[in-house]
Image 1: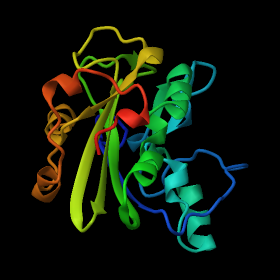
Image 2: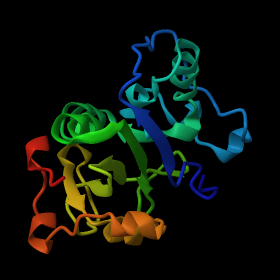
Image 3: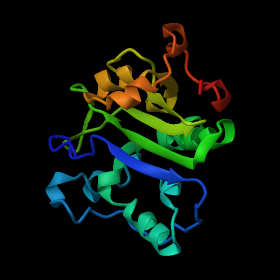
Image 4: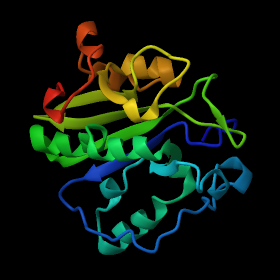
Length: 222
């Protein structure tokens, strides 16, 4: 968690494609994480009649694996505010229907993932000039890294959700695009550092490729 922003700086989760369950999200409320003080996380007070959606960092559907009881608990736990960041409703809708919401599924569709297991990391990019709303700065970029074994070799792939790769003073959130980027780009923007094993497993994407947004999952370089 980033105390000054009241959001998670990063989250991590494991996806077991071989034991996924379908669990309903009906009648589950977004709630504060009981492990932290209420003032350490942005909760219900940030939302409501203002165009902001509650966006999952770790995708709910990714977490529903293991036994039925484990999947049920993971389903409920995914609604803790420690896993939520605010997103404009148009942004959230486009992200869900577009490339961003399909990244994890695309791994299993396009790659021979060993044992159908993927580890994922994700989070917001915190910028000093993020816009303020109800005394909370709203992140306007997000990142995700997918890690998997293919034919016994570790692979890591990084993605950035942004309008473009230049920091702009004003961003229209419904025009966000997905870029495939080196992990070094995410490290610089999110002010973190990945283990060397992941950095070595990264695909070295050419600069001209980074400058073009992904128009479909077929454009991803695995």
